[in-house]
Image (tube, rainbow, N blue to C red; front, top):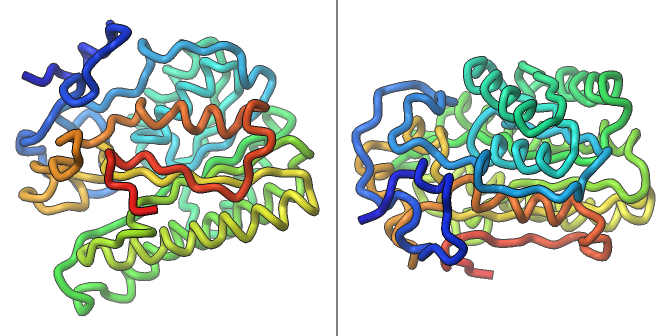
Amino acid sequence: MAPQSESADNAPAFADPRTFYPQPPFKNQKAFEPPGETEDMDPQPEYGLKTYTGSNTLKGRVALITGGDSGIGRAIAVAYAKEGAKVAISYLDEETDAKRTAEMIKQCGSEALLLPGDIQNRKHCDSIVKKTISTFGSIDILVNNAAYQMTVDDIKDIDDEMFDRTVKTNVYAMFYLCREALAHMKPGTCIINTASIQGYDPSPNLLAYAMTKSAMIGFTKGLAKMALTNHGVRVNAVAPGPVWTPLIPTTMPEEKFQSFGADTIFQRPAQPAELAPLYVWLASPLASYVTGEVYGCTGGKTPF
């Protein structure tokens, strides 16, 4: 029987990855609108607060993480804080989640900066880069992680508003943030984008989202050449498969999220804490010769 995620606080050295974290079917979730709040989820996601051990790999660095209030973004924030980085987290309006993430960052012995607002807006993207620099003195790691998705049965169900929101949140914001951040980033710093298996193997009911993730992969590979040549900045991406975050029960029909991740060889979705070490490594000096790469974490579904 799969344990609840809180049992991960005392993970044995050789836990069976198939059963250590919760497996579907998941319980009915309280109805809530996207982007959602972590406290409404059952089971609760695992963020690595007690399981991740840092080693000052990112000591003295400053990170800006979009979508840093919950999900993958929160797990990255926790891991970066444990590695010695100061962390600014951008989020839409999920104040409860954002404040909890800030508390976690402080528990890890680091400093947090909360940056609410809509990254669809270019001026807001520019402002959060500038606020990060004015507060912490620099921007050394930019993680473009925030995303929007909705499931649909047919292309006619993707109205203009949904399409615009998906593209502006997932693609425009990434472009705006990279353009502004690169003007201030020093050689040896880095950008990490959260792509998706959907960028390579799109599900038809996530058509608009999958399209943006394909664009993100192309952008990552192209910008990597430009940013390294002109600025000495590395650019990479992580492409997750199914991950248990608030985005799932808020944007998928019940029959989809109850079996979420069951089609992987693990027969479960990833927990956010399982992805965070990839983001740590890509941000660290250990990855100094790595740029233009996309690293899959897909539960064995990797098509590339």
